[in-house]
Length: 242
Ligand code: URA
Image (cartoon, rainbow, N blue to C red; front, side, top):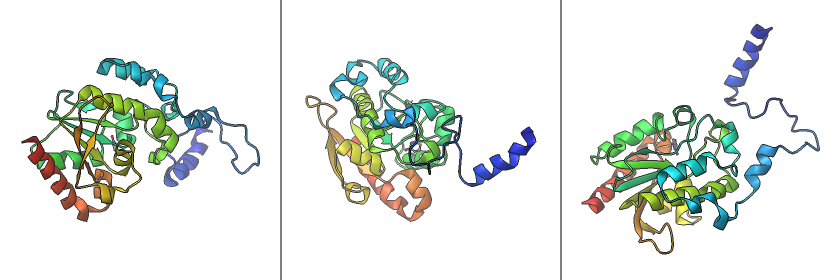
């Protein structure tokens, strides 16, 4: 009976389950499991010179290359690919980590609670989505909002690098540790990286982009006492743009 399933679904919901990865449950306590193709695919690091991002000359080509990419299993569980939002001609580009549930549902970055906080923070320095461009390191939502794995980041990194190259902003803002560590190629934490100017080159021949790392808005929702630091970082961005 369908109605018998409702308490089970409610229990899953209370336990935090919000995505079904496979049609059948798997017993992960058994010693040897048949390996899941979804997990296997995400472990494979791409050969960077052959990565489909390297062929893209326009944003539309990049969007299509991402839509037909098979090297990141997150795509299998996501509802939508989250490409970007904002003005592709903007001087400022922001890069977050990965879509959450709201972004996955609507196919746009930073549209949930952390996005609303981001919009408020941007407004303090007279920026809004007509004056910035926003994307993420990973374009597909990790199930249950878990952090992306190193293999998933490696598979998707050439896309965001090409994205930055095509937008070619004057200033890049990296939101949170994952974006900062990935694009600045460092293991330093966000506390050390934020508040200073870094320089980022999408390719060895492109010119340097002034880059500011700052705290992720989702972190600010949990630690509102840190908001002043982000405001300080945005003031530095405002000064750099003027
Ligand atoms: N967090 C991110 O890093 N990116 C989004 O698009 C939404 C939440």
